[in-house]
Image (cartoon, rainbow, N blue to C red):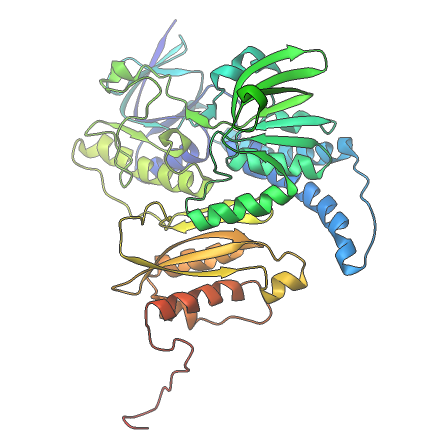
Amino acid sequence: MVRTITVDVAVIGAGSAGLGARRTAEKHGAHAVLIEDGPYGTTCARVGCMPSKLLIAAADAAHHMREAEQFGVYGEPTIDAAAVFDRVRRERDRFVGFVVEATEAIDDDKRIRGRARFVGPTALMVDDHTRVEARAVVIATGSSPWIPPPLRPVADQLLDNASVFELNAIPPRLAVVGTGVIGMELGQALARLGAKTTFFSIDDRVGPSTDPEIKATIRRDMGQELDIRLHTSVTEAEAVEGGIRLTWSDSSAKGGQASEVFTHVLSATGRRPNLNLDLAAAGVDVASGKVPAFDPLTMQIGESGIFLAGDVTNDRPLLHEASDEGRIAGHNAARYARLGADSARRHARRTPLAVVFTDPQIAIVGQSWAELAEQDVEVGEVSYENQGRARVMGRNRGRVRIYGDRKSGLLLGAELFGPAVEHTAHLLAWAIQSRLTVADAVRMPFYHPVVEEGIRTALRDLAAKLKMADPIELKCIDCGPGS
């Protein structure tokens, strides 16, 4: 028997975006219901940010022991893989538990278990048991790993960003297909824990950077540690005794092709939005697998009562962005439920900030090089090869490039590759969001010796190229004319 319920806002998906959307909708007076067909617990906690950083922490510990001989300290780490993965899962489950506990604390009548599909403009059917008549809908269904056609014959044997954390041993011979964020973070970590690892990239990108100088530095420095095959396409995968045989083509392979057997293959070829929701029944015109056009400041699809939030947008797949989008979508869905069309409000978005936890780390802040290609900008830069604190720590690799507007002197963006750029990227993001000029940023306090001095060097370089007055000259606060 099918039951029917009527609500103001239906939220599909109980991840970071969905939980934020439901909470915000209720805060603005809406009667909201949360629909989820999988286990509770966010992508970040269960298969993303937290378990990957736990694995990276173990790998960094091993790497630092091996690198300690440069300081006159000697020793080779002993890797207990079972203990490594036990800690990863134990701590991951702790993080997941907090989310599950908070989700299950929501009243039972405000949560529905099952898969939702549209049966009208804002009407949903959940499995075959509940029809939800909503005035507005927030889609926060996240994304899933995408497997390219050549790997599909061995799909059941592949590692991905979920199954990799269920290992109990380090893969003896690992192939990582894809050199984006997931591939590089997990692949480098497993390599540092002892896996003989080969990376395959279909182009020349290692990580998300777009600046040609930063990309070249990443390729050079990461290539000194890792076996990275650029401009290489995996064309075939076959299950064989001992693992998976991959065949690939590149300019260096004899006859254009080469093959090798790997005990494990990590597929890291991107993720696709979860949009199998019968959106056509809602009157949304969308090509298969494509995200419907939406306003990133309102999260609304056209003028409809449907809003998107989180990784399903395929726009900014990061936890803090998903949380913001959930709040925006929840607020506007509540307004739409109460006021109807033309009620959505535009919300300011934070300065973009993305960090990749490789070593050295990679970050993009504000507008990337690719986004600024047509604008009138100047570039300030620094190499970390001779940066004081980086050399002290034996981590003197990388480069930073900071972009400023030639007319206004405002900071616009930066691409970073180097030690601890997770921290320096934050400083630049705050400066950009505060609309500081390059001179304003240089005048901020910098302690010595710290890696933050690296971005000060780049800012000084940028200020000089912009022909600004000496930005390090101290300001006299009580000087009159001619003093």
